[in-house]
Length: 373
Image 1 (cartoon, one colour):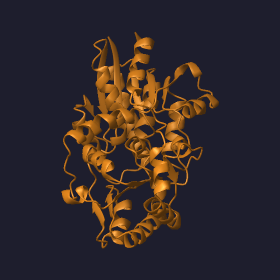
Image 2 (tube, rainbow, N blue to C red):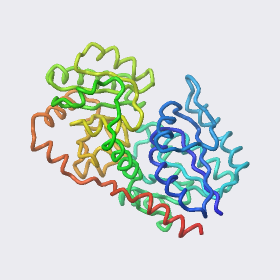
Image 3 (cartoon, rainbow, N blue to C red):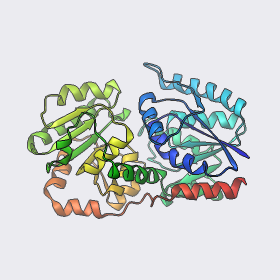
Image 4 (spheres, rainbow, N blue to C red):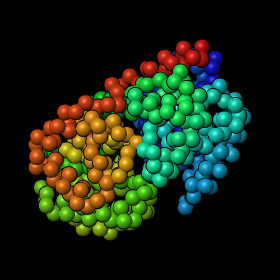
């Protein structure tokens, strides 16, 4: 029996690794162990409940006002101890978080093979996203198996010297998770805390907003809020729904600048299923998130990305996403165009999703069977 452990700490990691964990459970030839760092405590726990995943080890590393250096150092030390005790043959990590880099280093120091899901994404700008770009690049040069979501991601890895035989293009597992969740919410629509049911069932259009990137702290969020304020005044019959990230660098400016707008609904962070349901109800999604750039096209929703660069250029090239940055005028004109110009809206919603068809998990598991057994 091959011992495999999964290490993750944030909600996006959990969402994208959950389908792999669920599928591998069906194969008795593998022994699975799940270790969470709880880099994001509350938002992580919500996802674990949805997918019925109970961690075997919970490092609970989250502390108030924790610096990246402190988190990284503590994660490496604790994961080093965990790996020495459990002795897995393969460690799964996903994406570009501090947990990913720490787990990869600790596994490497213990001579354990590493499988990297969602490998090869690049902006080629180490300051954006920060610190995720460097986390992902370094992990690529530590990992042994690279599950790239697209051909572009694979090409990035090859150009950096990663052996082609260690790379498999799979699509993104976030689509697998999304289709699983979409089926649940369509059969049994959940309540969305902070939003009245009549709003979700009304004919008024919903613009969904998310934002949390460090590089947007300060002036970036002030510009975003200024744009949303003007849009809310112009499109009074629309609802702008903004689940606020827990980070005070996000909450403070948003609450101060948008808290008095009647058609801007500022709500607490949502668990996974209510958020998926809200995405299905939205007309447009404004975000600086990475995963939503992948998810929204599968729901037929245009995405306006409030970043200057993205490590997911496939969506922009396919026409399902558009980079608008944090420039106030860009945001206002792009949202207005999608609301007022039906042909532009249809162009974005009819573009095909470049991130896969929901079979990424099967490709990953089949690869493990062929490589490890």
